[in-house]
Length: 176
Image 1 (tube, rainbow, N blue to C red):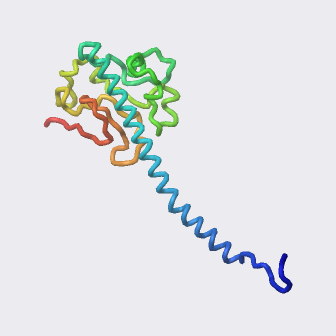
Image 2 (image 1 turned 30 degrees about the vertical axis):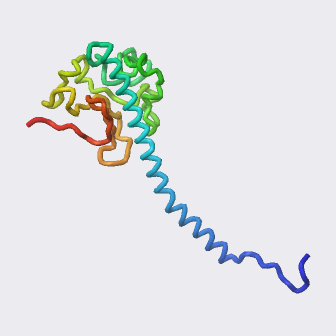
Image 3 (image 1 turned 135 degrees about the horizontal axis):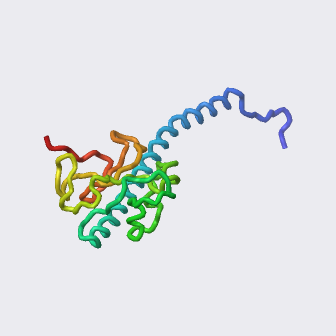
């Protein structure tokens, strides 16, 4: 019960507006940070997928006399009867989600992969790879990349190289 003559004090309109303003400012600060963190998380998951593809490719190479798969760069639709990386490595990497970059919200559903194969290396021996004048398995020759530049940063693209390392940095050069 209230004592007679004592008014209960509520919030004034000014106090409510100050609280709302503080909440809006905090949300405005948190949103870009959260967006950036989520983008980096998706890029890291994509790199992890490329590493898994690299492990599957290593198994494939051991079973096929160190010869790269002879596949097309990619396909437009899952319905196409074209040999591509995700079909050729299916027995080595059974989970189709390994070919899905979390930043890809469209292409994977249509084609079955967020990644594209460097078809210039198809059918080559692992130790006789060549890319823009660079040769050898120890050279940073890109084998698999994102189909689009979905990731923040300099390149926006992740790479799986011939040495089976994955990176979001362009690490290949050309001989002059």
